[in-house]
Length: 174
Image 1 (cartoon, rainbow, N blue to C red):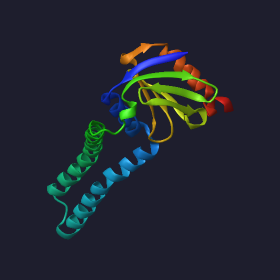
Image 2 (cartoon, helix red, strand yellow; image 1 turned 180 degrees about the horizontal axis):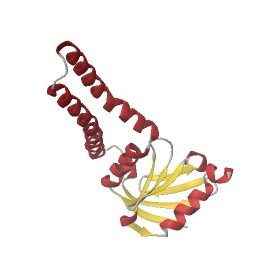
Image 3 (cartoon, rainbow, N blue to C red; image 1 turned 30 degrees about the horizontal axis):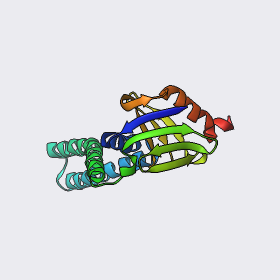
Image 4 (cartoon, one colour; image 1 turned 90 degrees about the vertical axis):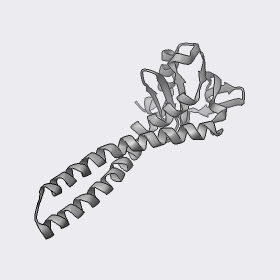
């Protein structure tokens, strides 16, 4: 079973954004970071209202603090996307751009690219995640393969993803 597909900068950025949206530790960190300004504004407003009494300005400030918390996540995600695009434009991840040929072996997933052959051992693969646009084969918290459905030129992606999922340690433990 072999897959042939092409990765672009957009695919690599999509992988980074997938991690941003789905990694539990990153989500906790995002919540904490977005809550810092909210807590600071709230404390300042409470101290101000204790000194001068509650006012409409206090309630407006609390509303602004809540909106700030909601906007922080979107702003952080946009910054991540911009910095990832910039990093890939400067050469990061060059070995992952272009055509890929994936096949399965007893050792793991064999990846052939213009830059060489690489084997990702089964023990390194943690998850296979599918979205409407891609299949992600994740190896830990910030590494993995992205197989874009749109740029698949050969092979059965569903069968490949199912075969990889069956070989994951979590599937063997069942």
